[in-house]
Image 1: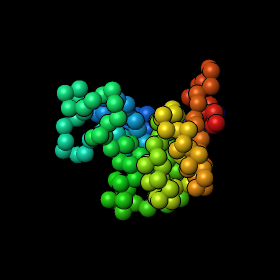
Image 2: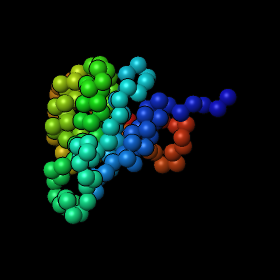
Image 3: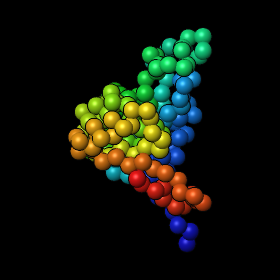
Image 4: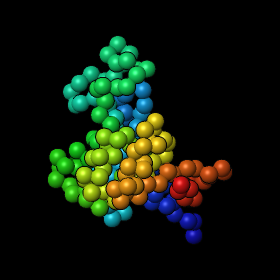
Length: 154
């Protein structure tokens, strides 16, 4: 019997798929929130609904974005708007959270953060999350990685 993909792999790859929907010109970030081995919310970064997508005419793509709502904030707020409880959940993000999103993750009562790449604030936001009891794991594809293998957790 062929081995099944680990759920952590599926959830991170799903977050990567949501990142494809992102409209920010600086970074494409996706996020999924899971609980009890199920995806309960998702998000990607971009401006508020109804606002024009990011572009070089509207945004300064070389500096900090003022318009884009972060992927994990979108996923948290969608769950809240829909009445989906996320306390005790895990979040998978293609980029580690910034300090403000780390605060939202703590306030939401999430248990674990899985991320693929490190955002520039990772040296402060990851220890901040850990200090508040949130487990953090960087998911790294090992050399020769295959779909049915787990990511390395660091």
